[in-house]
Length: 187
Image (cartoon, rainbow, N blue to C red):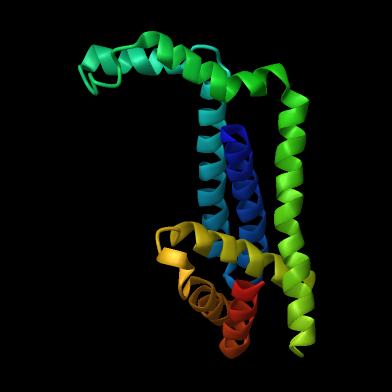
């Protein structure tokens, strides 16, 4: 379950970074779009570094040694073997089966891409056809809004309000965004 959650999170990052490119190319000025891509590149680099550190066999041991050396979190740093087991549990599968991990992230990303098809079709039937780049931008930003407001109970209003705001940003009819958010929350 933890591997699936990690792979889903990695695929969300990939999908959101791709959708930000589509969003920035449609809405933002070239200077701000390049700044957006710089920030996106920085986020991708940080994620890659964290994944590399996790990939190494001793990442959690080093973290454990660092925390013990500072005297932090004594309650959680008592058992060093548990940290090694945590490393093997989380990242051992990535090291042992890298192709399977890559395919898992790929298929999760394709799953997020099906939301693009859904957006495209719903907007087509709402008499507001948009292009594929716009549908990608809408879906990616919607996922970002969902991630940002994960703490809202039952996601009350996050779909509708998020789509309303996204449509405003893209220069589309926000009422249709509200309708799209309402339909997506029912689906």
